[in-house]
Image (tube, rainbow, N blue to C red; front, top):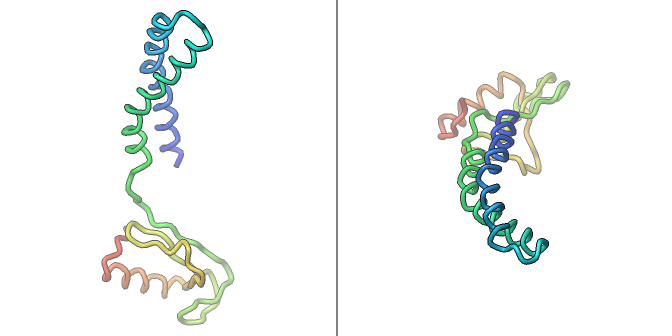
Length: 127
């Protein structure tokens, strides 16, 4: 997530050399009224920037999920074998999403490994 934020912050900095010339040019063209000039120049610059940076943002935020997301609970009872201890629940992977599960099932480490193998056989991509 930090890496994505750094890319996004750099993307914002890259917008400066793209948008500044538009603001400068517009201020020369619309020199009659300063307030209107600045507003029009800003609208034009933002429109051009959105046409360019839409694709950059899509690249930054459209990256594929690489790591599965797990929820972990200590001192919990395994749904499958009833063993008590640390239990896990896979709730999101590349083509698997149980984030809105109303009745999440937590599994002990052994049962969780078995569930992961079962999901892999069913085509869920879990690295």
